[in-house]
Length: 220
Image (cartoon, rainbow, N blue to C red; front, side, top):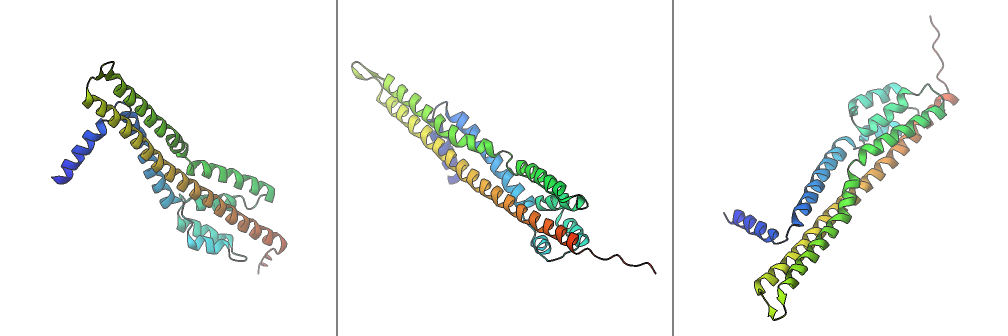
């Protein structure tokens, strides 16, 4: 009961924030949805399997073993998709493989960054909405001050409370969105760097096969 009472009191306090509170809550909901979605995507599909990393870093690994490892890691894994792209085009010229690897990296980059621009917008929009609430709250407070002094002292207090609550809520939402945006942007950069490293190892293995081709077995 105490917890529910605190929630009710908190909601009543937030309602003092005025009409700008509702778009701020909308921005907070959008930020929450994006943060949950990106957390699921990054921790479920954008984790480099250690076995895949060790295999690609091994000198002279076989492409059959890479194919098995990709199946084991899951075709939905972003690193597996990147390696699969090079594996499927390994018989092409190197310049062709490099071009297709870059295209695949750009596609995966868009997938990793989906929704991050919304967080970046919220970082800027939330404080501005809070500032708008501050302005409207203070205007409401000043309108209650007439030529003969205070017309409604409680109304002035409510206007100041509206200004402070709107500003605080806007800054709080912006901080959460900022931390989330910076974290996932860093994770995106790290993932692209890892893909570049894996791509270099895969191309090195192709060059190794060109320089030291495996001799074909003679038929009995």
